[in-house]
Amino acid sequence: MAEAKKIEPVKIAVIGGSGVYEIEGIEDIQEVNVKTPFGDPSDSIMVGNLSGVRCAFLPRHARGHRILPSEVNSRANIYALKTLGVEQIISVSACGSLREDVKPKEFLIPDQLFDRTKNRPSTFFGDGIVAHVGFASPFCEGMRDVLHTGVKELGINHHFGGTYVCMEGPAFSTKAESEVNRKHGFSIIGMTALPEAKLAREAEICYVTVGLVTDYDVWKEGEEVSVERVVDAIKANVTNSKKLIKYALPHLAKLGSDCPCRQSLKYAIMTAKESINKKTFEKLRPIIGKYY
Image 1 (cartoon, rainbow, N blue to C red):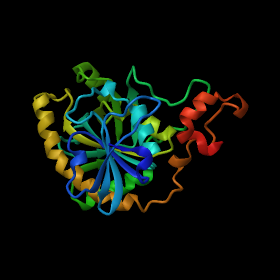
Image 2: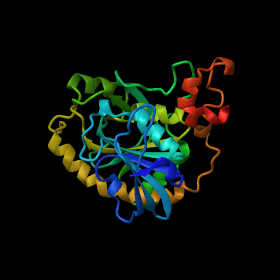
Image 3: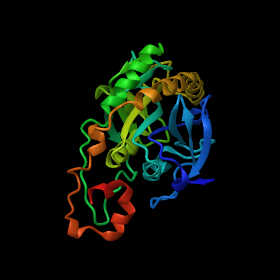
Image 4: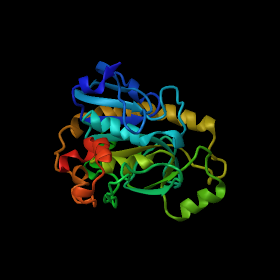
């Protein structure tokens, strides 16, 4: 396996499930293992060229889908991508629909998140360094606009905007939970966008989620979620998600570097310089080093 330090920096990454890292047309592929102070990432990272753009692909649940949503080491995943030089992440996430008009096999590009997870480490900070990043708008607007243009030009049935509520899993919702989420006005429900999005913001990486709708959760009579339906919808969505990624990469590469996402720590670190824990600082150097 190649080591991260021997890899030419890569600016754009895709985090997704089975099939995403197997997009046809990827050239000059290298498989990279990255060790982090937060443990191992979900899997080795595939680095190559697609649509003329250098990019990285990381299977969130590992090849063969071996990791539960609550077991995903998001800190290691985001940290590893940061050390490779990644500045933008496209997250591809299967999800359930909480709205009648958002149908299985359609895409939804959310603009908001609601956290119902319970047991997941959601920050790089602590152990002597305190930071509070802004998270009012959890997804990068510039990236969202590129993907929105992409789904329109590719003719993919989609919805732009809405709230992704992230549950713990791995079991699907009860009917009571599903109805409560609908009454709150949420659009889709999934198990993986958090803490990924929060950690990407702390790492000053632009982040966007594409929700691949697989089912109606359990609220719609006769359309309740089942493993068979989910698998069928995922297969149908894979082709469109690959098309969207191929379209998006060269457009994302042209975005400027002045996005607020990439300056999220500028005023967020509260710990006085003389009080910073040196061991923690060294651990977080790839993330906070530019400010010291």
